[in-house]
Length: 254
Ligand code: DC
Image: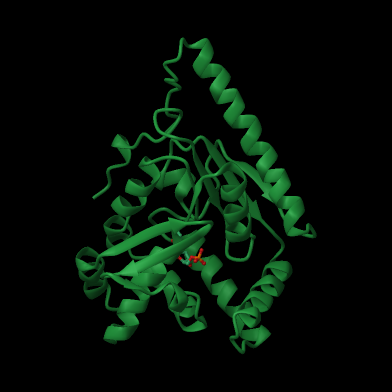
């Protein structure tokens, strides 16, 4: 089910929506969490939703090639997201599974699960329901293009491959996982290929997004850059709303 024609959040009708898309390791979650805090918005990582479904599939022993079973699973599983104080907690059929979702095992399977069109459409409504409430920073791969095409601000983060690998290795080790660099290299290569090459909602910048290269930048530098862009766009939108007599009816681009 694709309800993209009906999507309209935000451009002022709800609180602002900030979309931060980009490949694995580009810095999305660090930046999204920080700017959500700066602007007092909720933070939602949509990748965690795909990861929660992948966790369930692994628990049930469903192979990533069993497309129909995975679609059925996506249609019958309850995934709830609770943004709270800069963190994003995820509930799988009522169970808080947040702590399990960043394991290398899930990382190795999730892009294949997320590639399945039926899985994507089953998980679209929950993402749109979150976005429609407004006042939210959402990170993912297709937030600006498919999930929230009317997002007020669309940022597309990129970084050099080697740097993305270094960040992912450091992140995994910080979380206590004993990862080998070669494994991370092949996993990121594989995920880039699958995320960008899939037929439905591939990873790509929205035409009206702003691309920011985070290579060689400290997280604080990128956070301030992104915060500056958000500030500028939101105040422009506010001015437009005032000039339009308070209607705030900026047309949706998509
Ligand atoms: O951001 P992440 O690494 O947690 O994302 C996990 C996987 O989910 C990633 O391989 C791509 C997929 N994903 C997606 O297809 N669309 C999104 N909006 C978010 C994530």
